[in-house]
Length: 434
Image (cartoon, rainbow, N blue to C red; front, top):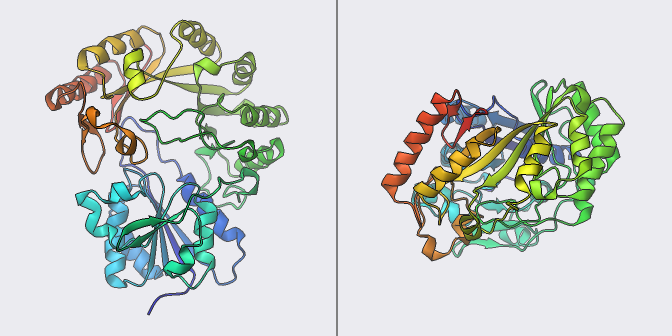
């Protein structure tokens, strides 16, 4: 008999301890979904969150079994999906009538089709694509839980004999309408807070899953941001991670943030971590960064080589880059970001770019190219000849890179990071300023 109750378990997982990663940061997507469910006001809703870090899947599964949920929602990233599916195997074996829903960047049919996940994917009833707050809330709200009911909910893929069948795209979330986990007191106190002022990105780089910029209605107002600042203050959060595609990639979002910051001392006494796209840098951005407690900026260069960037639909202004970088360095700590293993690059080309980046005088972060489900996995042309690990999604070989060359580059980067006083991690390497 199908379960129809509203006892909901939400499950996420932070990556394993990694010398290149910061300490635990709350899974913002998980808490946003929890806040959306709380905002429904359902009198019979029982909700519990497992935002995990470091524990074994078996231990977590036993705790969730004791809670005995009717619905399990998993926040699937490339690092969390394997563990979440292990928990799901246990929960579904105990009672196959539980409703199992996955959301997040790795909750994609092409990801679950990989051999290591295919058997576990049979237990998954629904995938949530796009903004998940309202979609998951609709699923929980309706007790009938049939494919016919789900077909009327936009933003889902329904598991069927024909595969995961889409119900149609859902409009992007209206930022003003989203319930706040900070204002509900769901987020653990201390540490780093996360905030989105908008969603989406104006670019469509094929290595990235940010997507396309949404409409201006998906921008927070200054008043809404001030409410978030006040809630973060109450929780004792010491820093802010701006989880937008970039500080300067949505003018309306930036103006809301700037106006809110002018009304309070919240940012003047805290560190702010964000991305900046140098080609769109204006004096107003520099002034904003100069007026906060401590600004830490990531600049996504990826490569200096226009031919490599063209392969992944990316570009940058080579003539303006040095002056823009100098302007950013005058007001913030800056880390340039590159990707190792891009299709169309080569070991020789990568190391030339690496040496050039080390001469900039900034920090450097080098990412191991990952074949993400909504990015290269879905959009890369056949001539890129992608060969990647089906679990970690790390590139192993592709156009311009043999397996042996990529393995040697990984080892060399690890030694270089350690020798420079930085850190070599599982997915990226961190270098302090040269």
